[in-house]
Length: 262
Image (cartoon, rainbow, N blue to C red; front, top):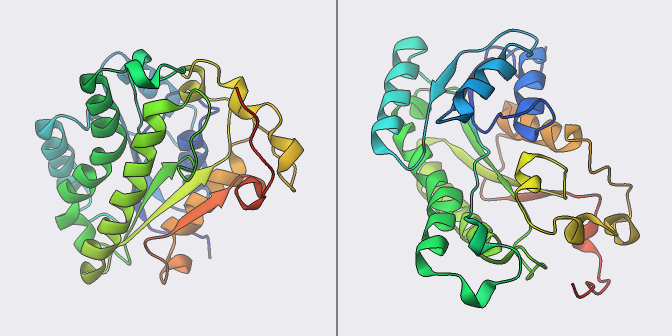
């Protein structure tokens, strides 16, 4: 039986066909899932165009996770469409330019708040908005995309702080969603050359030399290893796992090698 046969999934964050979210959406369809995508603003049209490249074209709902009305509208659409939800992928992160790039001490509070709200609090907001649907799902699962927040990375600055917040949110979601039979997990990916990466000044400082430390080869152009882990966590085969951070980074996180200064 296909890994995700009959599962109804919401996938956020699809902007290009080389993204983790796209790889999850395409792979989920191949594994038997029904999917709906989200997009918003100027990116909405891009997401709609990319949706036509999937194995089966998918509908796209407008969703700005910082807008309660959008969250309510998505919940109402999915309720009318399916009546339940078996899983969702949170692939949403944003920080203003002055919150990245090495100016950590100079970042204004407003920019830090935006980074946290969009990249961390929104994970809770999305799960809470869809809770009634998830409660009706089959062994439901929510999964978020992470980047290891255990250390201070060069140039990552307040996005790193937001990711640390996301990791804490994941633990509390696992606590509060668990009694409803809902799992919450994160996948901490190694650096990938995606749209999100392009928005980080000096991204090459993170990705260059990754293979010098990672014991397994890490291809910064291949999102499939990350996507396959996300799909497994969305499946019933991971039904006993919650509150976890699964690292898909070639083993980099487990090595004791010193990090280079920027």
